[in-house]
Length: 387
Ligand SMILES: *Cc1c(COP(=O)(O)O)cnc(C)c1O
Image (cartoon, rainbow, N blue to C red; front, top):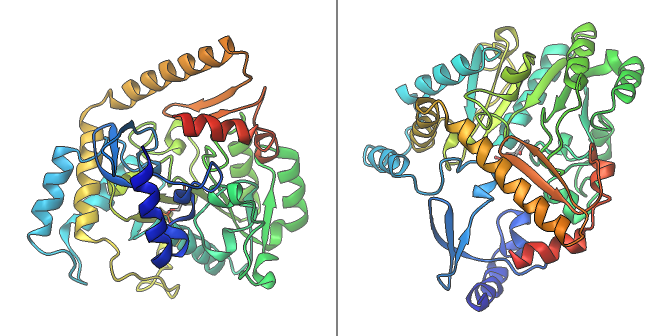
C-alpha cells in the first residue's frame, strides 16, 4: 500500500537532507518510512496511492478548520491575484494585529514573522535587550522552535531523536539557558533564588504540547508570574500551539494570567507560514524602528499568510460554539480509545486538554518530561503504524 510513498522517499533522500524538510516528517521514531501526501480535504488526507486517512495531526495544529476549507482557499486565491509580496505595508497586517490584540489583551503591540521559531528568537532578544541580562530559563521537554538558545533539552523532534541539544550550538550560548523540570514549583523557586537577578526571561508552553500533552499543574503558571514580576524577569508564554486552540484567544485568557510577551504561530496563519510576537507596549517599542533592538523579515506579514490567517480566525470567531464542539468531540474520541485499550489489557494514560491529547503507553500520571519518557515507545510505534 505504501510502496509509492517508499519509492518516492528513496528519491527524496537523494536530493533533500533526510528526504524531509522538517525532521519529524521522516517518522524515524516510529519506523522511518513516511507517507507522502498527494492532497487533503476536510478531515481526510490522501497518500500517493490514493489511500485515505483520517487526519488527527492537521499539520501539527494550523489546520484547525480542516484541510482546504473553501473560504480559506478562496481568500488565498483572491489575494494571490493581487500580488503575493510587496516589501511594503498592507492593510491586512493592521487588521490581523487588531484582531489578535483584541482577543489577547496582554498583546498591546504586535509584530508578524514567518515562523514560530522567529517569534521566539525575537522574544528572547527583546527580553535580553530590555532587561540588560543574558540568561534565560525554559522547561525540560518544552519546544520553542529551533533557535540556538532554546534547543536545550527540547521536546518535539529533538525528544524523539534523542539529541541532547544539538551539535553546532556554542557551549557559551548553551550555558546561558537554564532548563528546569516542568510543573515543579520548588525547582523553579530555587532557580530564581540562585539566578533571578541574571535571568532576562522565562519561556514556557502554558500547556506543554511537544513532550506529549501535559497540562500545567494548578498554581504552576501563577507561581511563574509572581516570581518573574518580583525579579523583573520577562515572562514569555509560547502559545504557538495553544493560541486560538481552546477559545478565541490564548490559554492565558482561560487562566487570567498576563505574560509580558506572547509568541504565536500555527493557527493564526491558517496553513501558511507564520508567527507573531506581541506583548507589553513598553517592551515591544524597543523593536526597530522605534527602538534599537533589531528584527526583520522579507516575507513577514505576507499577504497570503494574512488572508489565510484572517479568514481562519474570523471563521473561528463567528461560530461561537466551534471550540466547544471540538472539545466535546475530542473527549468522546479519547474515552473510546481508552476503553478499547482497557478491554485489551493495555495500560494507557491519555492526557487531554480540550482538543489536544496524547496517548502515553504507560500507567501514568504523566506530568513532566521525566514521566513522559517512561512510556512504551515501541508499543506506540506499533500503534502508530497500525493507524
Ligand atoms: C511549532 C512550535 C514552535 C515553532 O514554530 P515553527 O513555525 O515551526 O518555527 C514554537 N513553539 C511551539 C510551542 C511550537 O509548538
